[in-house]
Length: 510
Image (cartoon, rainbow, N blue to C red; front, side, top):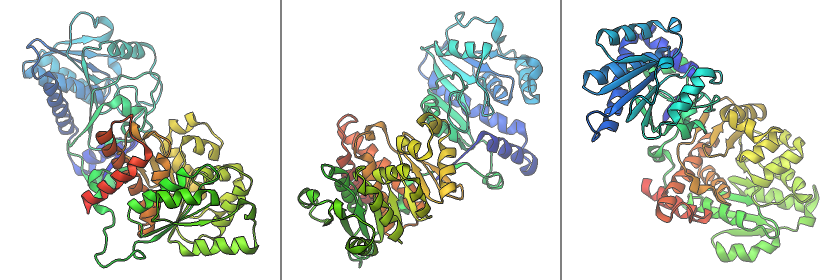
């Protein structure tokens, strides 16, 4: 597990390291510059001796890092040009110091306004224009400069800490941004490097240890946690003397006439994740398909016309809920009038952890009074469209600050929110958040979300806490997607394939 921080948090960590820990700013800067210089040398390996490095520096400490990179590479014999952008009167103390050292060592420098980028050829561009403090859109000469650099297609780009133009907290493009092949970021990952579109601009992200201590990070705090492949070892193992009851029972309330696939995928995923028993509660038309495709599942049916509060159906539904250790509500239910009553009755009578997904969420969006049943043992798993309906906002607004959107909804309704996107985020009511570091675009296929729902339910049934089941479920789902895409190809992967690779991921750890 690793941590991401916001731009503000990183500045506080830097300040704490300097003032309380006692590591001088110049030491941190030299180590940062060395990490970037080594990355540039790797890019220059095998190039002709006159392959050049253009280092574009702003007036802040990010630019100071860049000047130090130029000085190091110049000292190692590389052809270097340090390009200084911005008003020198606004330069930081560290920037002025680094510039003076570069002048003393006769490192070639030029003013960005007076230098034509067509004058020389460069194999590598080091982007040290803006750092993690960028808070407004890039305009004017800075915008022109970034657009010119973007047009130098033959050069490989290394971003210092974060690509210029990317918001460190949200990943938003602040007007324009320079796309990097490699981002060398310092101390901790920045949330904006994990969230789109920032993630797509960062290229490979390399976290360089330049001397920050976890003591400072613990004092300041962090923004989110990122679960990685090695965190699979924290998934629950299987007791040698366990039985099917030991590993939990999952009730899946899913499927409607002509919509059996979602229920099947969720049930199969719950089994593949290790649940001992899975029961699907669905309409009669789905019985034969489910029993044929997944004979391991128990199938109970109901007539939609019988879904009425009180009476025999309510007693029947309460018995189903009482049987379960975890409940799934929503995949493939459709949006017929009876669904509101079905969702309300399950929410009202379920006393075990629940995953609310798909048409269960649509029912809540259509009938907001259902949120009165929300509790902290409910995990909602909306994709961006569903989240937009739940919140009455737009997909664009959600994407602009995904962590905030997930945190806000979770805090307001005391649920765990798994907001699905290319970079899925998970939040709980106290503000703790995760950004998923696994997965790939091959998973953008119908049914993938139903598999995730089943994975989370399977982990819940096996006794994981709700927040852990949500976070680790997303991790496991993404790792299975990566493995399936590698084996089958991105275009050929189907949601059902994910369940096979869920089994492979589990076996690898167990």
